[in-house]
Length: 298
Image (cartoon, rainbow, N blue to C red):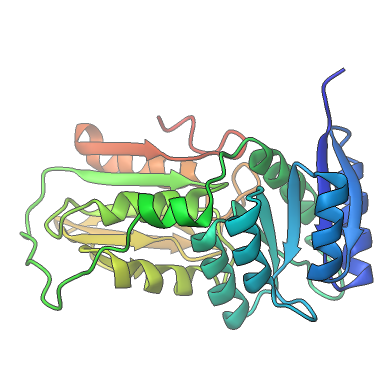
């Protein structure tokens, strides 16, 4: 019998603790070995229980989630999935947590628990499975391995013509993987269109943070926004991103049609459109995956 993934759930809400514990236990291959309602309790439980994965609330009493994560990644690195509120502040703090070393994040279900609770349960199960496979570095090693790259105030002007379009798809662990790729791209790179499984309200902050640390210009895609060299376009949360050609110009297209492989935005929607419009000039990159999304396009 395969060894179950041992999880410590850390959250100051008794309701969220109950939901997460039930969701993870129902997975069959996951075991919740303990719960904690504040970071100090969590610290002791980590010593006692030696979990494989931790789910961690962003906003905690006594010590905030970021401070606790900093200490954890410095002293005893473990795979962490952040549990975040769907707010602008929550998105900024969560993205900071990913930079520190959290593997992934998931947005808390709304207070009514209506509509999306089934998706939340399936997502948290899959993200914990993905986190259990992650290779975790100490905070010091992460900072040495991926140093911040200063971007000059004047970015190189990219040519208007380009030979290829790069489509990038990612899910679990993808936010930092995308950042690593974009930081290595020069300012005159071919245009890049990107779908990362990310909730609404997170994609705006994510695109802004990428734009601050990359030589290419990074935008949250807008409907009918022209696709240009030297630029990267991030699919907004809860919108599919595709491209179309109009009067010889490539444009970003957004829609809220049905979810594909349970996701919106979906990587397959982006890849299908880039293949259709660009043909042999399309380059597809699947950095990380959750389920089958994106595999068909490759």
